[in-house]
Image 1 (cartoon, rainbow, N blue to C red):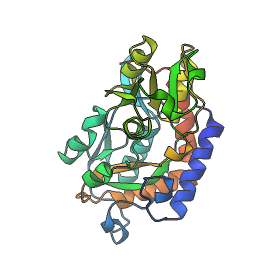
Image 2 (cartoon, helix red, strand yellow):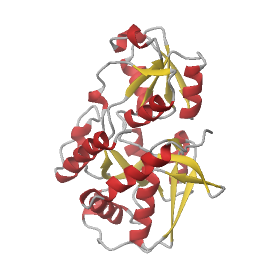
Image 3 (cartoon, helix red, strand yellow):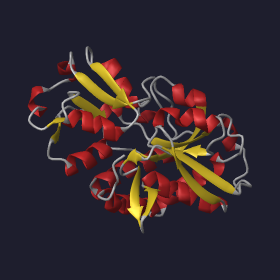
Image 4 (cartoon, rainbow, N blue to C red):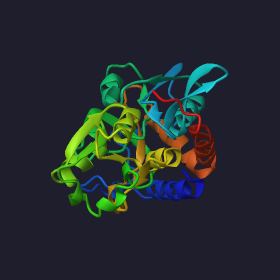
Length: 287
């Protein structure tokens, strides 16, 4: 992930944060940065009384959340984790990050096993996530999704229709699954909870292509010469990532979360998170 490219994504996120636009039927970036809790507009701006803040994430998604070995210890780091740490710090709370399968994140959030989810998760087109949880202002707009294939196959595809009859992988319960099932007519979805497993399936010929978030795809493309990106415009599938809390925001976290998001976007702190995560991505542990 190149920092100047990511800065473009951040600029989009900041622009979304400055203007709350009406939501669109396709869940595109035009939905803006409006939060999914009506209570946050009249809630106190002071930090909630929380002693400990537990972040749930799926730590197989560099540069956003991933495992590294630091001083002999397995640690979860990444852009989303650094943001979570800052949110906890601004609340004066202890911070803990817990790895969970992506497709279980929102269920476990509402069961109280974590206080917030930050996992490169945007509003989905079907509205499943907003129905299950409340959400913050946008904190990051990714590069457009990319379709990744084995090197040498990229010239075989010039449109989404070309994937008819092909096995196309996407992470379970993500908006990338929707791209496969709704827009890649005739493609056979290969759904897995782990992006690492998806990439291995592609490399070893068990599927024909993957649909991944742009920055994540770039990480795998940069580290694996056996992979290549298909040249198809996917810019219409971009929606900002958000922090998610339990439905109804029972702990009153969103006002403080949104204050932290506004601060890190305006003062350059997010740029530091991105740079640090980018540097650590080369150390990401598999599995």
